[in-house]
Image 1 (tube, each protein chain N blue to C red):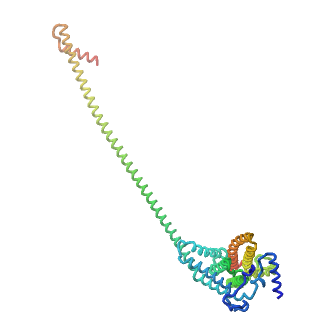
Image 2 (spheres, rainbow over the protein chains, first blue to last red):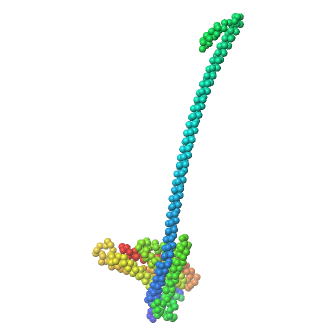
Length: 190
Length: 244
């Protein structure tokens, strides 16, 4: 009874301080040992059930999913690394092929230019030789022509001399004397 | 009107009619038991249905289930090392039980079983006894060297050993009172403010706003206290596994 009155007094005091709010009677429900057996019993039962459900059912599913994902991820990463390696190898092969093709092309080019140069030199030589022969022939022809011309000049000069002598002296000139004079003249002229 | 502490009362459900709790069977089903059952069901639904598709690329729900798994897994790895891995199912269950209990207690008309000292005390004592047994099983009598701090001068040992033993024994006390007091204080405060809303008429808006803010704060406390309870379990486990 005294306890109840005290509780009522507390409630009244509280109600005076905070209108509309009344404290529960009989103190904190948490400190009432009457409720302890049932709470402990149901706590143990429900927690045990939860533990078993988590341990045997829920958590294995999560860990299985996580490890599957991990495996898939590392598998995919491995695959990607393999593909990358393959691509790098292909790239290296390509570069190698390109380099060898380039070297081959350069060799072909060099060979061709050498051949061209050799052909050019040969032709030039042949041309030079041809030209030399032709020049020699031409010189021969020129000197023959000159000799012929000189000879004809002598003849013409002889005839002119004979005719001049005939005209001036009135009788025929001595052929031999004219020729002799001409030879002397041509010798003097060189 | 119900007082701010009425929310913590344990009421029998389906027991003998018209009989006080004291006269009921000690195993009687109560509002506390009901919310424990609801909590277990909610956690199971959250985990099992969330993972039912086991997708490679998880959806939102599956992500949350996986995140809770990885959160506790990481907590054990960081605080108790790889040896703590064996206790993962228990620590996970403990965290989820406390977290969901705290969070569901915030629902209107629900009951917060973590606001009862007997519940938090049983969990804390179970952890305390379990961790101590793990330590003794692993290290034998050498486990008791835990109470002798290394590098202490010999004449200090008679003083240090009782201090260490007292601090060890006070672990379950601080663990259980921390959780129970946090939950009880938050809920009481919300109820006190709620009690002002209607009597103040128009000015009841102020306590209403306060209650909205407190609800957000209580969600934080619910997470934080579940986290603290679990981290302490991991740390105690680490002490037992590795001593100092």
